[in-house]
Amino acid sequence: MGWLSKGKVTRFANELAQELARRYSPAMEKGEDRKISAKGISNILEEIYQRAVDFKHKENLWFFQTATLGNSFRWELKELGYSEKFIEIATEGLVVYLTRKASASSVQSRSAEKK
Image (tube, rainbow, N blue to C red; front, side, top):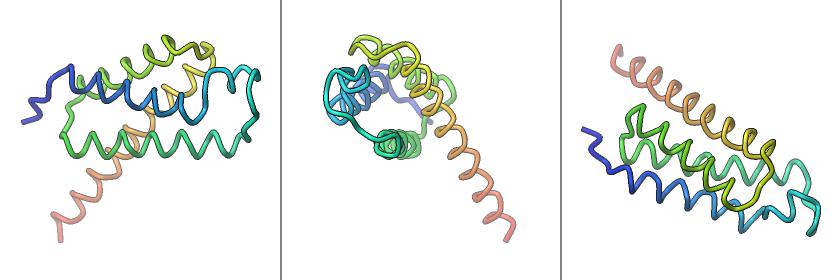
């Protein structure tokens, strides 16, 4: 029934943010460290977003749990020192990705049920 604890969702969101920080640090984002291409950043974010989608499906997250995931991700990025602009873009991408993937899955499920 989706009785996953808020703590587990928050820990997972923090893990995602930490993974992002390992691969694309706040120093890199601010230009203080080595450079990475926009495509490289996009690939990193997409891999993180896909992990979130997999987690959402595995744990059968409800709407509020998904919102908790997005908010926790945002706060951890802030804590890590990313710029507000980057935090907004990364978090919006996460939410859109979770929503889009969830919508696509439900459409596929309904199509399979009709057959």
